[in-house]
Image (cartoon, rainbow, N blue to C red; front, side, top):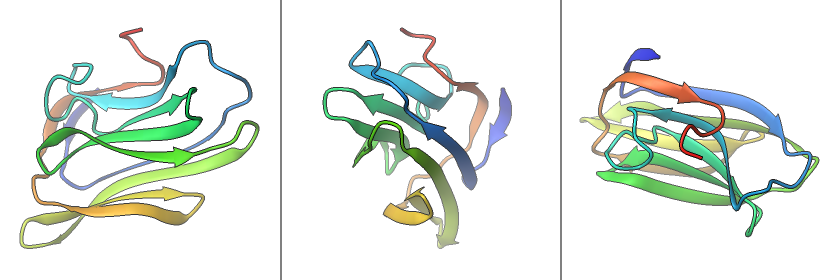
Length: 128
């Protein structure tokens, strides 16, 4: 449990998908206030693999949208370095960014960044 997740945060990890998954969705990593996707902060962030479209799918709490998501095609047996972070810009605005293998593949301003408390960290899904 993370007692307090500030508006500025960073998550980094490396992974390689080595085989097909049984279900349509595979939860890779999720930081959550506690719910599956009911409230703002339930995926801050959530990183999944969608088998049907062979995409890495990221979710986070951005601009009032609890399920703000992005899709990135990935290949089996390829190692990926993933970094997702949120950093302060100015005037109460934070920049939410996603990097794959060091390249920024998405960024947007987040005008509704919040602190979250008692954030749980899951590798795999407790809701499966």
